[in-house]
Length: 407
Ligand SMILES: [Zn+2]
Image (cartoon, rainbow, N blue to C red; front, side, top):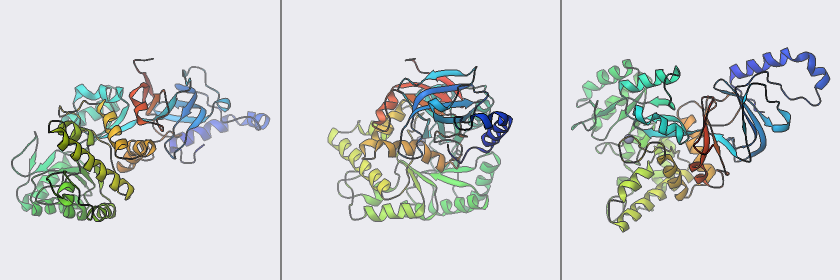
């Protein structure tokens, strides 16, 4: 069993063991920790914990409230009376997915969950997002756990509702202050910011301990964005300009520059959320040979970033009516696999690494005692093929089992 249990779960386990102490002396040789209660039990299931590349066969996993409270060999863990039992039947239990680039709509919340997404990063804040967060936390609304950034800060012309225009460096501090006071802790930087304004926004963000993520503004450029400590870059913005060879946007890659740009990204500590599936969807509107080259070159950059040690995020850009909320996560996983990452590497990005990016690695992303019970049950081993996730048998959302349509 792991040694990094959630403090409250650890305390509960210690209290429980103390209560059971009289029996320990007699059964010490054969006993495993006994759990008096559980709400949900997966019995004799294959666990893909995602802490390392491994499958734990014939496991029992107990869940109480929204936490995983036990995980171990099926013949060593008693299932408490009263728990809802889900038989493994040779299936695989893995962590829920994070879609790290969405534009939320209340109507779409259920679709994310139904397709295995238990956490989302909302990429353009608006007041109703904060209401959704509260209602989901209170159990009044079904939806993934939401992390959200601010409305976009941009230059003219404003392109989306709630765009916060920042046209002068001297205005940056007050605009950032309003975002902070509105409850946002991560700023969205958008395409048409001027460089002096960008710098002033970042100074104001740093003063308040805020993060900043988003596009690579055309007038700022990739190098300056990386040097400014921007936490994530969306859509591989700026990379086409920096790496472009002959033929136009994404039509070729300057191989001589690629290692330098990758190393710069890694050294800056900036993550990339390339949103590959939506790009492919848009590219299909162009002539076939153009689309194929652009998609192949983007995959090449994703692979180079990954193998060069720069970090990646899996996000779909759902919610702007181009790709479907929920199901498009499977297209994004497939794009990363097509770029040359192994299924384990792809799924790590969509689970553990997303949690690391959000600063919640002790909360979700692995199947471990103490972690939030956000889990997926699938028929076949996802470490063999990420397409296994297209056939979900069910989802555990914060401890609640939701069988899929096939159950
Ligand atoms: Zn977006």
